[in-house]
Amino acid sequence: MKILHIDCSIRDERSLSKELSALFVTKLTEKFPTAQLDYLDVSKETPSHPSALFIRGNYTPETERSSEMVIELAESELLVDRMILADLYVIGMPMYNFSVPSNFKAFIDNVVRINRTFKLTEAGGEGLLVNKRVYIINTRGVDFTHGDIQHMDQLQPYLTAIFGFIGLTDLTFINVSPVQFAAVEAREGAIERAKTEILNLIKAL
Ligand SMILES: Cc1cc2nc3c(=O)[nH]c(=O)nc-3n(C[C@H](O)[C@H](O)[C@H](O)COP(=O)(O)O)c2cc1C
Image (cartoon, rainbow, N blue to C red; front, side, top):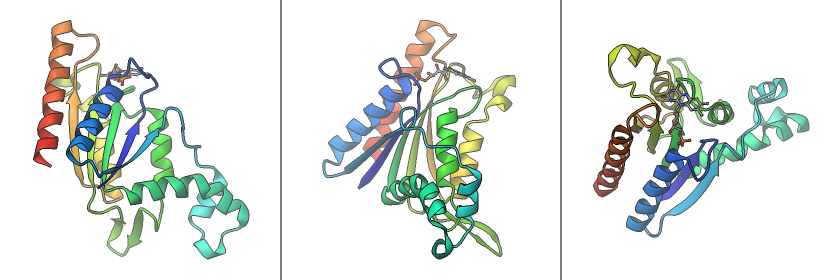
């Protein structure tokens, strides 16, 4: 098994999403000791935003790209390779302003690549990252799962759509909320529930 572990919180030792994604990966590698692990913290190694040259290169057939295009796409190619190699992703994902952190959006813009992670057919887009599982540990200050703020959650619908577009349809969201602006007991309860869910998910693997 090849695991790609991605974090994107801008915090380190105080980050709950990083703590819980690390717990997930630790327990997973205890269960599968021969698993290979790749780690990427996009808050530290934030992928470059795509440029006009990147876009032109992306839509130019590989054999016809200029050397400038090849250089411009090099970072993205490496990220795509890491996505292709892994068969299970564990992602520590805080909600920022109702959606994903901007560093993770930059990552998405680098890995949604024509003929690498999706192709266009007469029927529309077809995802190429198939047979992979994705576990998303999503920490949120506020609980958006019910009530009249539900529609403000632009994170889970967005990730479901964009990951689905590149073939990642086996998604499990571990919703850790409320962890801020909430009573201590509510935060602790959310964290305990998430830890139990993580252990149960790994047991079931
Ligand atoms: C820039 C920023 C924006 C945030 N926006 C939201 C938000 O829209 N909704 C929410 O529920 N929590 C929001 N939060 C709270 C975080 O989602 C929450 O504290 C989370 O635990 C942070 O993850 P971390 O502990 O891994 O850093 C925001 C936090 C930051 C730093």
